[in-house]
Image: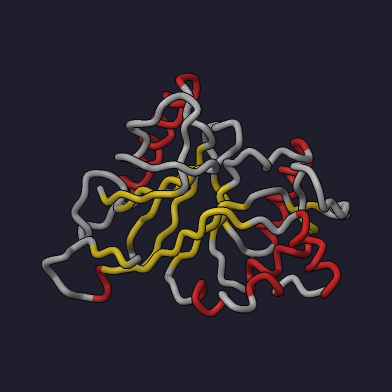
Length: 219
């Protein structure tokens, strides 16, 4: 989708394109096929050109990437081999949400490995499966500051923390604001969740246990 922050001024400098894919799982059967073919690019061969075409492409990484991931073809314990991250780079992925119900399938060690692997592959990551604070990221695309906040299941216990995280990211973006994009908060706020559903006005309108795909709102 293309977003224009100054719609009355038709200028490509005011626009950026963003692709949010939803779940991408390099796990279980997909991981098995990648290892068989010895090609981490395999899952992306027919979609990489499209994904690379955006200024910013973000995913929900459904499952940790770890070294020596066992081949798992059944059940709901997910992991993918660390080398699978090369496929994300090949496909032009810029960032990944870790706020989903499979991120901790191999515990905190699996999460730490995933963060290291993504960093080494040149990808940003944001969010936490337990909605911990200070897990967000701001990207600057064409002079537009874009804040990404990941959350997993907005319950009464985590909603306040998430709202505080949004406010903090907006404050940080205020410090970097350029007058070219008049706005009293971050130029753009993106939220990504791990469980499907909908997004309404940032985090408003979510019931206990609800979460939702990914969504974006201009300030």
